[in-house]
Image 1 (cartoon, rainbow, N blue to C red):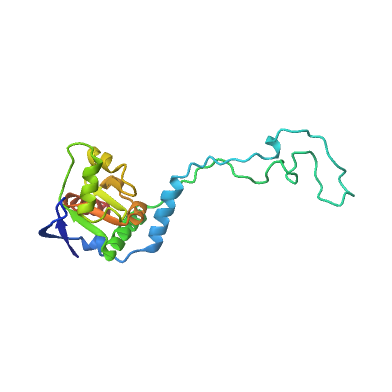
Image 2: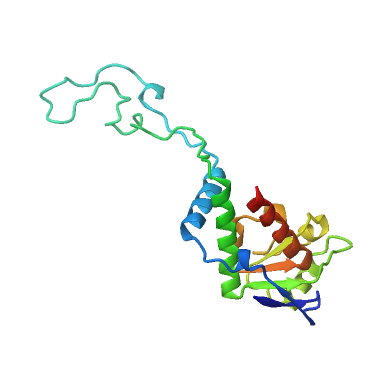
Length: 213
């Protein structure tokens, strides 16, 4: 698959680049995508939820009513889960939701996400660029020139660029990530991918290394 290369003014440079078929042209694996997104969201959970059980509630331990003959559920003290304000039965406890996912599955998921974007025509390739200083208006101008400002763009750079990142930080629904921060969730969550020419080369290098490993 070939796509046009644009400059930061949104003008077609007349050059075309070929997307790697082994990455952008594969048949997407939906189950691998599901597992990768599930792991990403699970690993982001704080897991600090907590409710008090019967032994943790403050209150008297005096038995309120007789065990039998009352016609209702049996209960002991005022901390009983049967009563309002009592302890909770099997309530949530702090826990870690992290789980392991094989590297090959994560790689397949990322490839599948990129392949979906390629099939949707939601990939824009732009010449390498940088900003001299963090300026939101420069990033907005770039997004408008590429006609992606209202499409929830994800700009992927070959290396971290602080000025570009800070320029996009206040732009609603826009995101800037280096190639190291490219994951399945971010790719799928974006409306359109904006890739620089050096980013495409870096993507090829990264996935080729993973396949060799």
